[in-house]
Length: 637
Image (tube, rainbow, N blue to C red; front, side):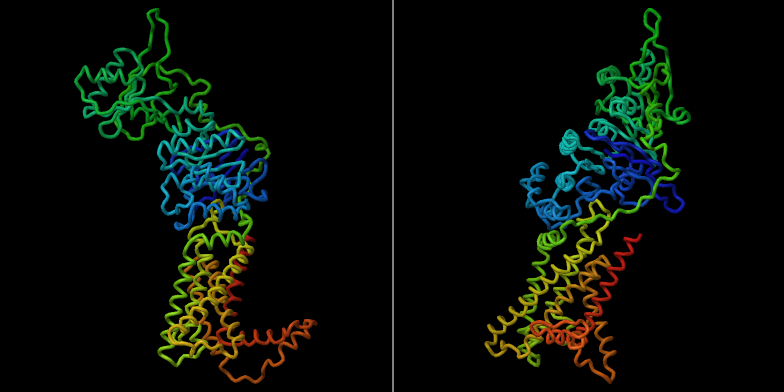
């Protein structure tokens, strides 16, 4: 059950709030429609309910606000827009990644794919899906964690009649199993046809809260749509015949050569057109929307319609009711065109009429005790993903960008090492790393930095974790998983690069250039530290600046900007040296270094003391501090 109480959005500058004091209920086992024209505040209301937008008010999902639910994704399934997935990712890969985010087993993917009818398209890429298939995928993401409540924003928008009927059938089945369904729409006929209860918004305020049957009776009227090149003449004839027969018929001129006739039938209109030789291009029964208010204002009614009324009397002289199913007068008219009507006498408002529909709904339980201003709504920080390492592995391996980047790095590095060997004057360590002196970084380090930047940059470009949260979560567990995966990827790339370069040099030049250097251990540590450090710099920078380009720029800034600054700082004369650093560190920590650990500590200190190592360590420290600062700042807010 959903209970929304006093939902009010924060006003923007001097404009009124988009949603103002909206309160309603959506009960389990029923489908509830949130109806309103575009701009009425439907999406803002849903975002306030889900705590994705700041404002005031509170929403209870089965008695608990969303920020009090341990795992919100398992309680509320959300579909607010198109599925924000990478176009190259498959349907199965996208759902598997979301499974890791919400903490459900991978076997749930096949179950949901079968329910939404995507079994034959499970290996299709998201970029090739039609609108209908994308809606199916979005519904699959909402159903993945088996939630009790579904909240959907215009789920049938842009779908065909068949697709829309199927989607609403799924929503009806979910409600039949005891779930709560709330969806928004701007089509009154869709709301009356598919929902059990209709909540109407207008200008950010709630104007009606009705059962679907009452809504259809007070807001929808049957009409006949007519299109004819002689629409004005046909309208006059219909009004004249209605007055002569003392029948309640209303003719409304639409744009161009169209008429909307209320209170008549296709047969009567067709016979009138045939008798007078009027050509008719279209004649069809429709259901017309009367707008959020069932009656027009008096001045609008006077300017838009000309009413000729007559009392209906039987042969015995007693009065009878009119044929018009509505108890009100004219329908809402979008265009101030000429309208001619012949109506009977109006009956007073009765229970269930439009006057009652415009009244505010009954106060919710406990609403009488609320303060004058509802409690503020803060943007929710959801603990997602629940399984960050599994999520990151599926994200990284689900698209071919990483594989293509790695292949490009290996090919470029092998060709560059052969070219450097042919030119000569290149030391063997640089030859094996394919690192010319003119380049700021070798291809492997650049590739590792790019893959690290993609790890967070793609989250902001295709925010799979922000489907029901509005923003990518800055969870430290997610950062640790990305750094771990980036480290393993950079390590594999470093080893494969050296191996490919050695093999290529052996094939082209023989054994002359493939000897192992004497100080291979320290060189290997430096090489691995460089590639892993570049990968970490890319991850942190992309997470801070929310862009893959910014992450790669931060990687390039280390050798181009930071290294010269460090070299200039260390260029002066040194009076003292840090000899015996590892021994003093051991004395401070009161522990013995196992397996010759003092030697490794000293080697690590020498790496950091180098200009590139020191610059990289300084950059990583600054980026990590900036990331933690932004994360803590958001949590404090």
